[in-house]
Image (tube, rainbow, N blue to C red):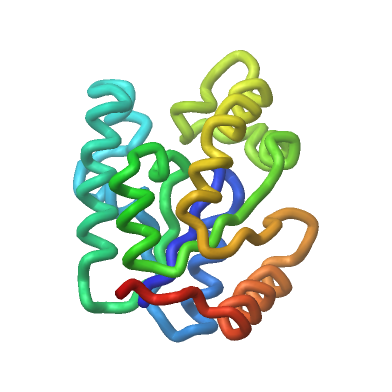
Length: 175
């Protein structure tokens, strides 16, 4: 079974995925990196040139491909992957989904110098993060098997908590 990490931009999905994969001796895959490899350009550049809908189409295809295979991976998803119902369904059915939860205020501190995330290149990033959180938190919760607080701890402790959660209460596998 795959493991997929979902959460807001800056919640640590890519970093946690790499560390978790090392501990589990699995391959770590970042869907944003896979998308950029497929596109041959940065997400921001593609987003600017083609719009969000076209980007989400590519993202949907990549998530489908990454979770459909027979190999086990730890997948770090993009923050907006959950916006499409088909992505939430596929993730929930094909992976153990962990929601790395962090507040908009915590994320704003982490991302204050970020220039790569197209949705945060606005005059008031904190307001944008609050709006995104309000829209996305229910979607992350809908597809997650577990919710883990991603703030206020070290990477090592966070990964250990996830591993403990996976060991103690594995989710029911699809039919």
